[in-house]
Amino acid sequence: MRCIAGPCPETIRVGLLDSTLREGEQTPGVSFTVEQKLEIAKALDRLGVQMIEAGHPAVAPDVYEAVKKIVSMKRDGEIKAEIIAHSRADRRDIEIAAELEPDRIAIFYGVSDIHLKYKHRKSREEALSIIAEMVSFAKEHGVKVRFTAEDATRADYSYLVEVVRTARDAGADRVSIADTVGIATPVFMRNLIERLRRDVPGVEFDVHAHNDLGMALANSLAAVEGGATIIHVTVNGLGERAGITSLHEAAIALKVFYGVEVVDLTKIVEVSRLVERYSGIAIPPNEPVIGDNAFTHKAGVHVAGILANPATYEPYPPELVGRTRDYTIDKYTGKKAVKARLEKLGVSVGEEELKKIVEVIKSRPNIRYLRDEDLLEIVEEVTGRKLRLRPPESIEALIMVKCESNTYTTSVARRLSVLPGVKEVLEVTGEKDIVLKVEVSTPIELNQVIEGIRSLRGVKETYTMLVLKKLSNS
Image 1: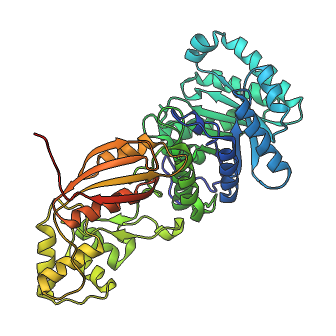
Image 2 (image 1 turned 180 degrees about the vertical axis):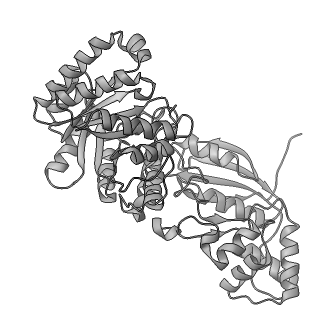
Image 3 (image 1 turned 30 degrees about the vertical axis):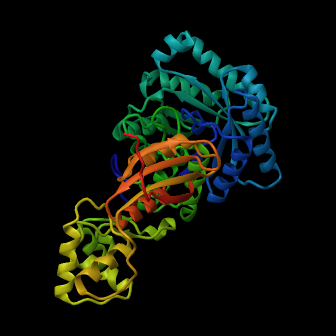
């Protein structure tokens, strides 16, 4: 077991609360339909998350309807996870949440001096009274209660102790420590949870870490090392501003660092793709665990290493999350990688031929990567053997793209615009959604452009038209 913020505790006891349907929907530009929320909730439950924060039912009628249906699915045995309804520290909010009969109501209130002064306009004493009253009011409805100390990491510690003690004494069995603006460090977070557990016994702690400074995962793990038993996550790290701890990062880190498997890791990619499609927020190719490049190796020494032993350049095997490793063939490629790829294709070459093939590959620095067909073409050039039919050269094309339903077309268009060879991107009406003007010098490059388009999330199909002649009045 490896710990990041101090000596390891004897045991790690932790689960995940997924807030994609609440915090995740607070991502700018994201709005799930009720049916999408039900599908996401079912997917999260199959994944095995311990708690699902279904939404804040007082926000809007559709949110209310989604929470109601998710609670109903739990009641009917379709979902096993604990279902949580979010609420302000407000009687009407609590009543609306309670009438849906969730497993738990989560009440939040800002506890830092800056929140008290500028948001709530309450004194510390008034805030404590409100917290006690609202937690007690929720408990009267016969549900479990979690209190979220919003902006807890900027609160005065002695006052935070009073807040947690007040919530506990009013009936909250869980308290969430929210790093609302993402300013904590791992050492600070671990110490904070350890001190709170010591000073306010009888409470289970959650951690809700925002990622404004890129510290959400590290702070969440540190909180667990300090004794927190629930990490708040969202699929793909969605949420306000820079989001919160990503489900995929937290799940794999708990497995790698502490040997704790909190969800079915092989289903993570499936859930991430589902939320990517419904949110319209694309997964970056270099995203850990779920990104297209997460297990793709490029540099020659790296590829040689993984061919000999994958552990040389992989912290965990891709099979753990239902994926496979790969490597690119381009100017960084060494002989071992090329030889291994050719053997996989059933092609045998001599040592001198292999050396020349690698030299040809490295002489083409503008090609991002070679597909197997492109590699075979180079082998033909070097060896004189006929391995494939060579397509015609000199290509200019228009490529029409149809996007998946529920995909934000502009998001796809932006990603298409940065592909090499794409000169212009047009969003259009009709059966297709996007038209690309492409200019390339070789069929290899055209193939790469088409493959690059098809590999993008949100692209359903493409139709390519070759330009035969161009007429001009000028």
